Image (cartoon, rainbow, N blue to C red; front, side, top):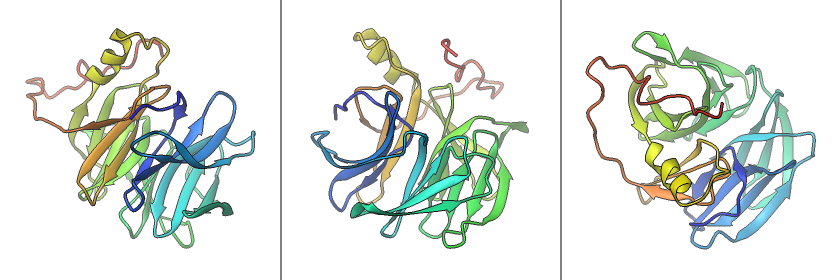
Length: 242
């Protein structure tokens, strides 16, 4: 699917209407949009206060939960009517990513912490540290709950960490450098890094996109052999423009 160029911070697929919801920031305003998955047409949109920088978004029941960057504020929208919304506060250090297993909310704040929050009280009920080979994995960003795991974008990289929400351990990595490189090779020079994961559980489909990417990709994964020493530094480097 081709997207209007935007700074995507998170998105999710709502298969009941074959649409996706995404908080967008471009160039100076955040919005929450409902977009037709096939055509990219914006079906509904809520323009946020210009002082708010919209971040992670997840759907639990009929409620869309959203957090905001550099603040402890969040919003809950009616999935059918974005004008119906309420504000909440949370105790994460910052608001970056959100996901849900249908029971609790999972959140990230740009550090190595992975939070669990009660969806009613919005209180933090558990925190784990995301680690790989005993090393903390910082810059945990956009989140998605997939088949019992938390899949997390790592800011400044084109990699996704598959994380156990029980203990925070990274069980494997997904490397998607080829997607961004393909866009660069075809003339899209202004794009930023990979950011955005959505899982269509009903149809078992995986979608990804990035900041200022003009396209949304449905992808299928294939196993690859990692480095003999297990290090991901060379396979998952920070983008050169950071």
